[in-house]
Image 1: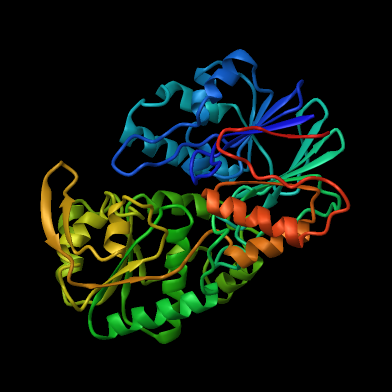
Image 2 (image 1 turned 90 degrees about the horizontal axis):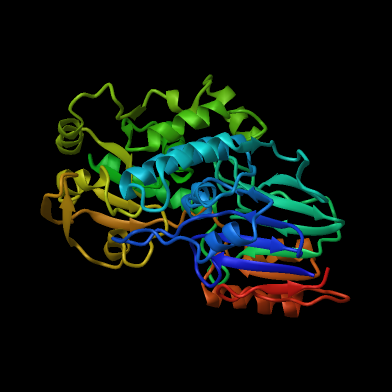
Length: 459
């Protein structure tokens, strides 16, 4: 019998942590935290006791986002002394995100020394490279199309095939060609994300064209576009979308990248080959005569070479030159974006472009829903009251498949059993209902994980 337990991300998005246990072997898929606005992040519920009392044989990380990796070092603090399996980009990006998280929350969840232990214990694997997880269990990573290095995981567990989607995007993006599928036809168990299980949105092509038109309108009237964005994945995609649009339209405008984005860009530069990014994107780079997407003349990073960054932010916000500024943080809770609120978003000819999902309770969500009088911080705890007078518009970029994409993906897998995580209860049960009614099975049972309750499946 397999017991599959969720210690987080069951009926919620955040703190992904799924344990597969057959009574003899225990393999953990992801170990993340849930970022909570204006509070400390939440850990998975109860995984420490499993590590201390029963033990874990191996850990597999699907990708670097903190909601999938942010609690991993705590496993070592609790006594885990095994291996963490990941792709090389996942290891490198996780390192940056863990350090940043420690800077924000200090040693709330684990001591700094265990961060290094987790990194040193990471075993690296490319896509489509089979590797041993523990006795009788072989794994293989597949491109999930979500961010650089993101993976879905195929487990061959004594002949039982288990497919863990991680976070998947079936759509083409500037860097990726969409999620890949296993060659095997007889998948026994699928553990699937359900983020957009009840939501559809325009295609990426439609979103990018709408974004481009709006940017053009702002720049041609001499305005500025402020685009708060997630440092990993979204910033790089948005930067390429804007840069290509500026190039195609022949616009005379600088595109600035501010915040932690530049550190993630350095990792992207290490993985510009067909293993990790789309051949389509590499071909475009070659046609442009570029070895790096970030060396385009109208892209500029606000990095350590700029000595007085705050003065520079004020200058580019207030001068007469049209520009686009992509900056952290993506949900506008802190970071350089607060400087641009004060310097640029008080001008009606500018635009605040919302390019990422905004969690309920964040400042970004409040602005998206109509709040215009806000209090910003300068990074030293000083509050400034600001009225946003710039145009505010949301653009439906997403790193996750929409409802229809998820449904098609699940039917193509045609598994005997489905379990749904990484979505609110409504999304999980909507997909459960869909596969029950639409998927054709000769036998097997379809279930959805409930919060922290194990699902037991016959082996």
